[in-house]
Length: 142
Image 1 (tube, one colour):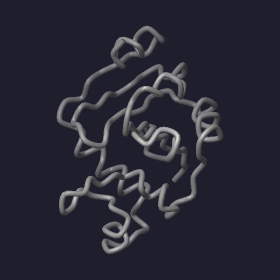
Image 2 (spheres, helix red, strand yellow):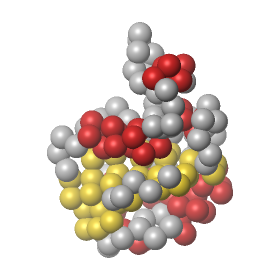
Image 3 (tube, one colour):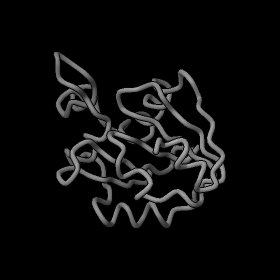
């Protein structure tokens, strides 16, 4: 089942927001990685450079920002109040705005790769990586 259908079945109002991927990734970086210098961001491969894929979630895997991991991250996300939030991906411009997202749970996203969820104020984030069993999931507050 695709992610939109799954979320709609869970009672959420789902709106695709075309062309927002770059904007949401930049906002995420500002919210959760702004304490790093450009050199630090380069050293942890936060961005695509020289043939290497960058990942925003490297701020967590390189321990540059405090976060919960694994089961603790999933539990924190499941308990978080989620009225409205954004869902977006690392290497895609596909992004969603979710309303009535209270029912959104970590397990709904467990098959997604490099997916980010943030509240609309970017005060918390939940991330599933493509490194299942190695890195993440992660949950952090601003």
